[in-house]
Length: 258
Image 1 (cartoon, rainbow, N blue to C red):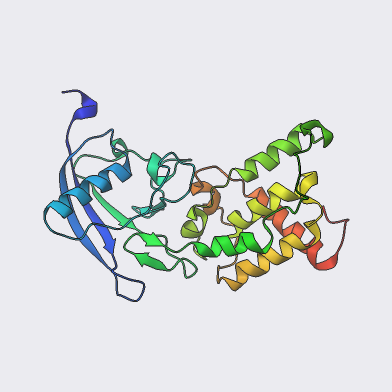
Image 2: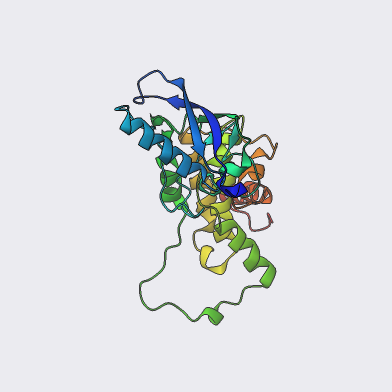
């Protein structure tokens, strides 16, 4: 038997909550046949198969692509959004990151703006409403313009691309003691503010999106950078600085604030 196929014993303490209105609690589970190459979500699948075979209710959690692209699978694992290790979503975390015999605590995102649906799943539609408030570019329909018709400097293009890499998972909110969505919102504002295509709505975009963020009851940013530390795409905290400048532009109509 290879090291990768060695069986691990894992103790789990998982948050269970039947509905948004129900009181939640931790339940303990034991697995003694986990392999190091399993992803964390595969381990939860394995647990659910065991629970179903025993006639028990499986643990509700969310996932989709399981490739670190969609942002659906976020969990707080041992107190860390997405678990230990830099730049990875929960679906990219493997059981080799844990020790044989370890106890693992698993919780949903904790934020007023992310109410629990059931167990480990939360409602992140607040992000959708923030995007609807201004995270888009209005263009006339028709053929796509030639890529060279709008010259963009290399540094600017890379900054915009890096901001656009945000997958909207909500780890930044879960990690922040204030449950701030500033990193998410700033990434969406930055990707447009930096490019020519985003200029027509630039004067109102930041104001509208920040106002919606506040309406959704996300907290304020206090510049502690936990958000960037847990972001699976490494979104830079500098985007929050840019968001604040863009917000001032939207409020005062200034083209001098850069």
